[in-house]
Image (cartoon, rainbow over all chains, first blue to last red):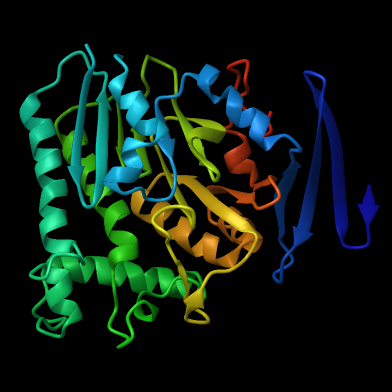
Length: 83
Length: 263
């Protein structure tokens, strides 16, 4: 859809019975260049997190953990599992 | 053959996963020795470290090592680039620059050079949440890196597939951290729980993540304007605000790439 300041693209996606609203915005900054950001609305961030175990991840990025924090973390669980 | 090495250092833990068929142990030794050296020389918790002596004014900029001067210069570059959101001079009451905010990412980038120079092509190094991914776990496949869920250290909120990319996250949920907003000198207070940045340089991803966390949601837009870098912010109400570069890396639950971070 067109607005006075540019195009706004709105996309709505349904995945696995869950409604995930995607609103893509093209917003001009001071230089007149559009910077595209998408805001993903997930009503079920927590449920997605529960599925993490099935993602077979190799590592975790997060705010810096202490050694004790590491011991409680998913990264330490990954490090203990055989490759 | 896969090799995994995990060592406690820099007040955190370094985890290295190497998948190259041939791995010379001395290359791994050298990379970890470097990280331990950074710990000795740059830890703010070690009284006799270069950083502590510099902080007390016992070491001038002229007398500082080439490495310390390099990190301080990187801090200044980032201060300018972030319009002061990241400001290493705002952490100490006396205004002397504190390079701690960039040291970890910079150290990991240097460790990566050691591994690369040692002809390793497929490895993933995680130092306290700063992840550098080289190549992939198998030919053509990306390393799968989860972003820590703000409320649960055993869960992830998003997963990206990365090859030859760094992933850094800044947030307030660990260590009771108070990240300082360089523009105000006060702790960041807003509705962003964490910001994750992906891009080619670990040093810059680390710095941009901190600066973007300070900026809040606007930080994602700021990172989106930096060529080659993407960002995702997790908000207090459970949303992920992300840029197209980040979205293109997101792995779907079915294993495919390029999707909504929470999908």
